Length: 142
Image (cartoon, rainbow, N blue to C red; front, top):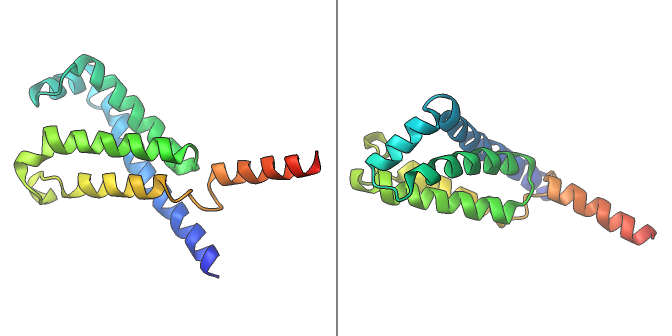
C-alpha cells in the first residue's frame, strides 16, 4: 500500500512540476517570443541574454517533459533547479520572499521540488523505472 501511494505521489508531483516548467518554457517561445525573452533577460542583467533566452526556454520545455515522463530525472532536476537559482538571483531576490510581491518564494519551491524529484528516482511509474525493468528482464532472459 505504501509503495503504491509513493509511486502515485511521485507521479502527481512530477506531472504538476513538469507542467509548470513546460508552460513557462512554452511562454518564452509563443507568448513573449525569444526576442522578448532576450529583452527581458537583458533588462534584469542576465549575461549573454541572447544565448540564455533560447537555452532557458528549451531547458524549461525539455525539462518539464522529462519530469512528466520520468526520464533522465537527476539531470533534468538539477538543470531546472539551477535555472530557478538563476531566476532567484536575477529576477526575484530584490522583491524579497513573498511570491505575491514578485519575490522568490514560488521559484525556491520549484527549485527544491526539482531536486527532490530528480533524486528520488521518480517511482515505479517513471519511464526510467519502466525501461530499467525491461532492461533488467531482458538481461535475465539472455
